[in-house]
Amino acid sequence: MRFLAFQKTVLLGRVHASMNDERSIDIIHLLHVLTREFVTVYEEARLSCASALEQPGFVRLYRMNHQDHVRLLEKGIAETGGVWADFGSGAGAFTLALADLIGPTGSIYSVDKDRGALKEQEKAIHSNFPGTTVHYINADFTQRLALPALDGVVMANSLHFLRQKDAMLQLVRSYLKPGGRLLVVEYNADRGNMWVPYPFSYGTWEELARKNGFSHTRLLATVPSRFFSEIYSAISM
Ligand SMILES: C[S@@+](CC[C@H](N)C(=O)[O-])C[C@H]1O[C@@H](n2cnc3c(N)ncnc32)[C@H](O)[C@@H]1O
Image (cartoon, rainbow, N blue to C red):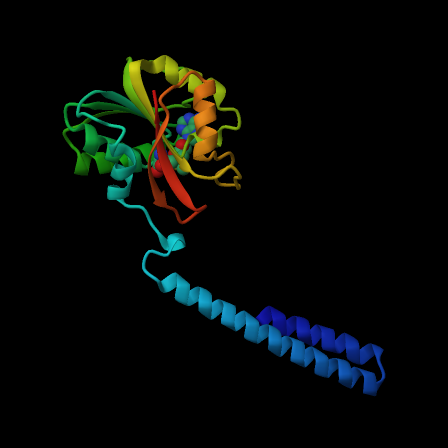
């Protein structure tokens, strides 16, 4: 609003300088009216947005919690135990959910190129799921890693960093035991931004997974998201 007032002052100064008194009075009046109208419309829009934002469950305010992370993965994890990897695990939101779901008899290879995030994750795992074995690997997941045969892989909000996903998907498939599962968590969108450069909607994922030799792809769950409209999880085998 301050910017608007400034623009108006500049504009009025220019009008005064370039016109005779009569015409400038008309134009000044018109500018006052337009500005007042604009301020009213702007205020109404601002107030209606503010009241919408206060409604419980308004999607843009939705912040996911541990239960949401668990809900996104749980239908893809039928039993406890097993050897899993989480590629691009970050601070561990989905590693914690995985640890919760597979329990202390399972083990997780948690891979991220961000050492600081892995340290943070290690603390959270230690406080919340001290019984689950987690191996922290500070590495680029696009490079082949020395991993045992895996029962499952989680890629949550990490595949969208790759423009070309085929090589990564082939690599993931090579780590999986026969019948092993890939759980993908992604924004349900095909157009990205600077933070989520190459997202893919569930429909696009079905095709991408099929093209890379995965079968039985199915949607597991969705939750509202503060960015884009929703986050989905999907399983492929
Ligand atoms: C948006 S965060 C998601 C973290 C976590 N999976 C979650 O959903 O909360 C993406 C993570 O992927 C990691 N990442 C991206 N590209 C990577 C790569 N090529 N190798 C390893 N980690 C990568 C980033 O460092 C970051 O921690």
